Image 1: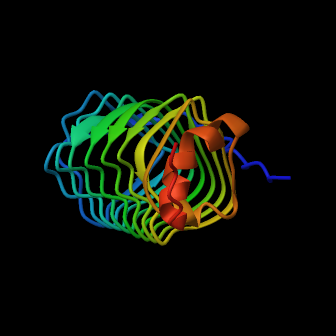
Image 2: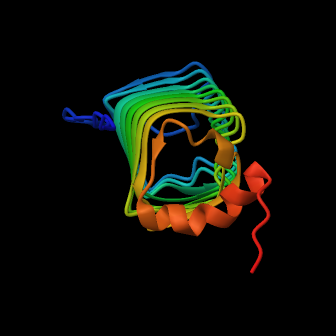
Image 3: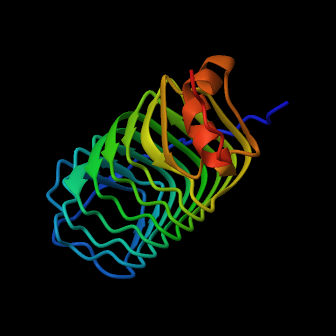
Length: 216
């Protein structure tokens, strides 16, 4: 029996509006609301966001490498090329994001829900995901290469050309994916649970992985 993911329980305090200006590298933001701001190309690398709400902000090329996002809600984010490499997201809700080329390689995600929206070319190579739920979203060519996934659920979401090459999966539930296309790493699905219908859809890919020739 697959173990279910533990979901975050985020309860935000009364928030203070962001004072303005630009994000600061290694900045410390506690109980701050960022609403409808253009944060494109700003550098918040190494910053700490605790009990924050980020709503409707543009993150094109925003540098948040090694940032820590804790007990926060991120809603309606949009942008291309956001750099969150080696970041930590813990007890975070990501809602209705429209992002492309997000860099999360080497990141740590724990008790995170990604609900709604569409993310193209999500880079989670070498990342560690524990108690993560992708729900009602579209992921186009997500890359989990070399990542470790533990108690990860895909619920009512589309996974298009997902890559699990060299990934390690434990209690990963793919049964709720309404679309499951695997571009690489199908042999790494040990530790995942799929439905009978998904097994039939993946049969040609599995046969190719095992070197089985199917004729007639």
